[in-house]
Length: 78
Image 1 (tube, one colour):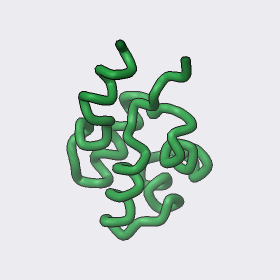
Image 2 (cartoon, one colour; image 1 turned 30 degrees about the vertical axis):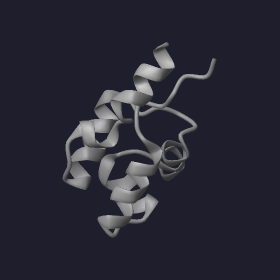
Image 3 (cartoon, rainbow, N blue to C red; image 1 turned 120 degrees about the vertical axis):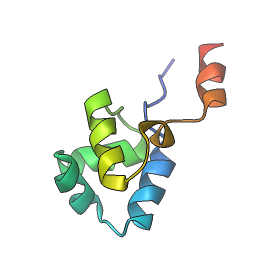
């Protein structure tokens, strides 16, 4: 069974676009590579807690705002 990413890829992408940032710009500000940023937005890999914190800081939101809704996590655990 494939595990769900720590971040909600669609929310990360939406918040990035709302902030007027390209993937490259957000990646640079968060201290990660553009290719890693792309993988995070695709949901191919999970962001670590420090990366989630840096993304949230750049996007001016809470870490919880970037994570999947509770119901998704609960459904995958069942």
